[in-house]
Length: 409
Ligand SMILES: C=C(O[C@@H]1C=C(C(=O)O)C=C[C@H]1O)C(=O)O
Image (cartoon, rainbow, N blue to C red; front, side, top):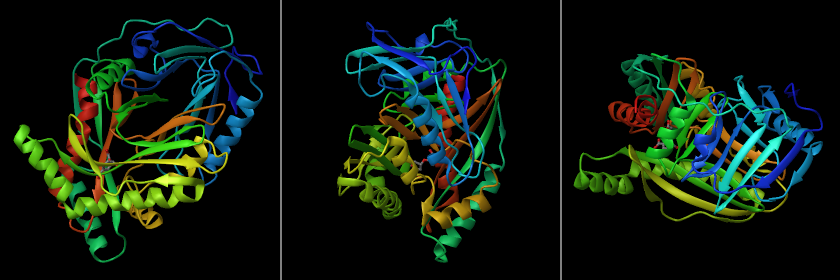
């Protein structure tokens, strides 16, 4: 466990109501901003009161939960707002692969939040906080291949589809990375403001260098109520309104995409059912239309049977078939074997948790790891037996556009 210098223990936490803070993202200072924002609502944080580098391995979520229980349990909390996200909050990112290092939890020293017309500020300790400075442009952006070229990746997709046809597994999600280099150091706040403006239906997030705008809500816990938005099955946007509608209709009617979606729903149902006293999954997916792609989407709701925290639920759900595959252990094996890269936090859980175990966690898609002038971007898609490599590449390229837009404007 690490507790930042300049803060005393137990952490002195104070939450008070504040007037309308305006755009949450515009309050962030430049260094290490934390964010989870959708439709202008959510939480932003800065500074560091406590930080944990979570050790890799199968026990990582339990380790993280214990760390949170210790840090929150001994905090001296003066919370005048008492709502999910008030009091001390930890932002977190977990790597996709449990064996990869890089999972991090951070309790910021300041958290500014807004939900349903209510706004609040939480501060920890009284040392002065870093102040807001103007957002800086990144200048020209150039791109290079990551681990595999587009052609190599298509070969890998074809190989995976062949293994699915041979009956080794039902579905696997394969991704690739793209390396972006900017002329000037990348200001994460610039990426966040662009992402929030162009993708308001997505969760714009920033945790420990992992930045993106994900449409996929892994789990939200509010008391005993839980919600999840399952996405799987994708088509790029059309060239005009008629083409767009036709693509949406074709996606809803596509056997390949409906089966891919069913794999994702089945994995979520299977992991949530034992934790819930009630669980509703829709019979038919809907279309979620985003500026770059259209997805098959299912909104799942439920009621937790016992006192599981949001992180306990994350631990049970990750990785869903939307980002791993079916069956999960075989899909993970194939991903490790074929992708030729470490996904780091991409496709892993990202979000926040409070001292009562409430919180919101997404799947870190449409994202990149940002450091200095460089960003490593990630995108992928579900592969089935009848997947066409060129179409999968086009889908991944459409998904890369989210972060390319964030970098280039
Ligand atoms: C893997 C990604 O997205 C996932 C895969 C999808 C698909 O294959 O249709 C759709 C949404 C996400 O669950 C990504 O964005 O990189």
